[in-house]
Every structure is written in structure tokens, then in C-alpha cells.
Length: 188
Image (cartoon, rainbow, N blue to C red; front, top):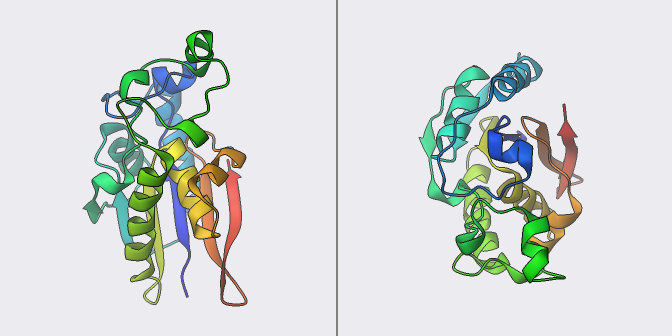
């Protein structure tokens, strides 16, 4: 039985500054491109039954630099839609909305935690169909992949708030005695 390999895209200007980035298309920084190449080195020797990516340029470029051939893209792997909070940092949001938490409150004009969980549940169910053939790579974004990790082990979307995920890191989801388990997390 294969593993699901989660690969967060490399650094962008906004990820470096803590700005929420969902639908805005940004290029990787020079650091982000180097991070993507290093992620590819960590994946060397693995073969994938499927490589599924978010359709955002930063995810697709990360896959390319990591030496992965994307077999399909899906909006279900896109980053959490931050709605009115697109491009804004959590610190700035807290100035007008103290106590706000994406993991609990979602984003005005964007998605709720339950909506994101439903998308990632579909991705994980689809990825499972390939596991008999081998590993599956999912290339996406910080918050969406954190939700994927939480959902894999039976937690609500808010459980992703407990899982730090840095740019261009590799995490693996597998099984322990037949039960879904996080094998590795946030490996650089």
C-alpha cells in the first residue's frame, strides 16, 4: 500500500510576508524555486502512481522544479478561499477583528472550515484509489494541506491549525495497523 505525499509549494513573496494567498497568482521567489528543487531531491527514488496538483501557478511550478510530472489538476486542492482577507495578514485582521481564527471562523466572502474539509475529503478519497498501485503526490498550499492532514486522521478541519507546514516541505500520510496515520510531517 502506497503513501500520500503532501508537498507544499515553494515560497512566494506573500507567503514570506504572512499574507493570505488563495486565488491570487504569484510566482515563486528565488528562494521558493530553490526550495522546490530541494523538495525534489528529497523525493528522488520515489515513483508515483499519480501526481495531483492545485491549478495555481505556484503549485505547478513547484512540481516542475521538483521533477514531478503532474497527471491531473483539481480546484479541490486550491488554497482556502480567504475572500475579503485575500492578501491580508492575520495580524492586520486582528486589528479589526480580535480573536478571529481561520480554523474556527473561516473567511468572510470566502470558505468555511466545513467547505474546505469537504473539498479535501474528495481529494483524499480520490488519492486512495491509486494507493494499491503506489504512492500519490499532492502538490498544494499550506492551509489546504494542513486540512488534508487533519482529515486523514479523522479530525475536523480545525485540527489543521495544530499542524505547522512550512513552504516546500514534504509530509506523508499512510497507515498504522490499517488505520490512517501521519507518517512524517513538515520535513525539510
